[in-house]
Amino acid sequence: MLQQKTVMMVASHLPDRLKRLAKSVYFRGNHWAHPSLKGFGTVQDLYYWVADDKLDSMLLLQNYFSAFFPELETGTHGSVSLFDKDGQLLGVKKFTVVQHGSTKIKVSSMLEELQVSSSDGFGTLEVHMAIPPAVLDHIQDQQSLYFWDRFYMGYTTSRGQTFFAHGVDKTHIYPEDGSKPIEWYKKPRGEEWAPEIPVDIEDYERFTVVMINRTTQSSNMTLSLSDAQDNSLDWSQVVPSKGVRRFELTNENTQGLDRLELRMRMKGMASEFGRPVVFKEFPNGAMSAMHC
Amino acid sequence: MLISPLNLLSTPMAVLNSLGLNLRVGLSSEDPMVGRSQSEPYEVYLSIYSPEGSLLRRPHVGHIPVNRRKYFDVSQVTQELVPGLDHLTVVHRIPSSLASQMSDPSADFEIDKTPNYSLFRSAVEYSYPGGGNGSVVYETTPRLNDGQRSSNTFTFTCQTVLSESVNTHVILINSSVDPAYSTIVNFVYGLHSSSGELVWTDNVSVGPFGVKILDLASLVPAQIVSQERDPDDGITAFNLIGYSEEASVTVLLVNAAPSLGAVAVEHTHPPQAYIFPYSAGYKRTAKEDARQAWKSILSAGRSR
Image 1 (cartoon, rainbow over the protein chains, first blue to last red):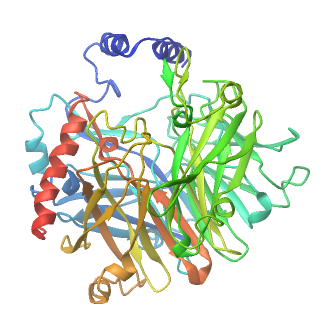
Image 2: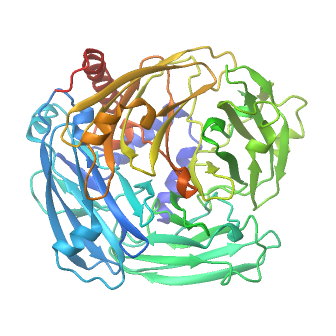
Image 3: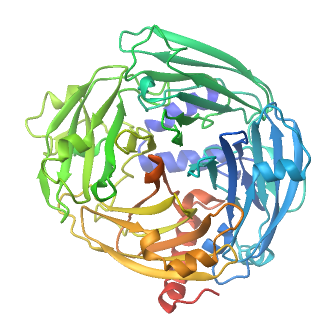
């Protein structure tokens, strides 16, 4: 990580033209995004799911291949893998999606179908939509091309509200040759993130910070919440590989800090872009989510 | 080198008065990527445009000390100038050290090296009075519609849902880093059902430094919405595809449930963010090819 940061720091001081040259030398024939991106395939990420008495998770899986190649037959198939909060596989559901279409899957229904009784009511999931054959044929003139499925995870409340949060990072590389998925990240990187959003804690019934670990080892993550007087509170949790943990902030457990314009800092973030998604619950029952 | 201080760190934001939503923006004086750069204080300015896209005023709205977060109530500032209609505002952060050397923030300024402010985003928050809020972080994309290179839009998303309580509003923002920008955007879009049928196409123009709301519940015929409704949960969902040939448009999706006092907002990703080609130039090619293909399909009003 130190070596990578040093390289990035040096690169940031180079003029643009020299930067491009240095980059091509540094990667020397490897894919610029990741050395394991060879041939064709997709890159998939882990998303947070929740299914409890207040919230359900709704996948509206758009056939994004149709968006790029509308004149090709892009009907395809895929699977949703559901994991518990510790990253343990609960089950897999297969799906098909037609050209220009979408498939809706609710996690509560999937849990019922799989006959899984997840007492925790939350975890992670990964979608893998296969590249349609016509698209694969069409892109053969490229040396290598991977699709990064950056879908928007939907959430529905028991009161009838719907909202979405986009994906932020990468977890697995799925080569199209059928070989087994490759980890995007290996060890946790111990990154630190300072979300921009001010937290006016009295606006919320509950403010939940959700952290996913996309790496192959568990990571100790610490959420710090500070006020304008630099008073702060810390909460730490070990997040297992491919698992998820929630840091729940309320008026009660943040006593001792100002109520307005609190600032968060997440330490021990497992991957560079594995930043938090926050869920806001309001006294009137409204909810929303946002990636930081 | 000459820089425009107003364009160092900015975010275009739509004031959505017609939806009855209040707008705040949350700003940070820290680099979100900890360790990259040190925190510094900022001066905050707000460019307020009329519904027709004329710059009305650019007040200094506050100061953010080192290592702080601050909310700015945009609606409160703009209400007096534009009380009822939708319009554009742009929030700007200028490092206090720079601002102290300037008499006019809109004048170009000579500095040794442009600082790296990538990923410095603003938390744009909409709320119903007395209700919940929804927020999203984004920033002005580099060199947005600067006139120095071709700009266009191609976007797609699944975030369009209609139900008894929820309505999706597609927010189109036509902004620029160039104060002389004058491009009118024609945004062409289509909606596909889950079965892949193109059920609705339309186009809308957005003036320079303007915003437009596509209120899908009002635009899409009720019969289509009803046909596509899932009887299990009462939700009608569409896939949105849209493009513009004239300029880069910021596209946000506001999912509002006014009867529940609830609102949520999310942005869309550019198509380039969906692919990792070996040759980075293919990102532009893929986007351009797709946009051209959709131009043909949507102008013909056909789906397959």
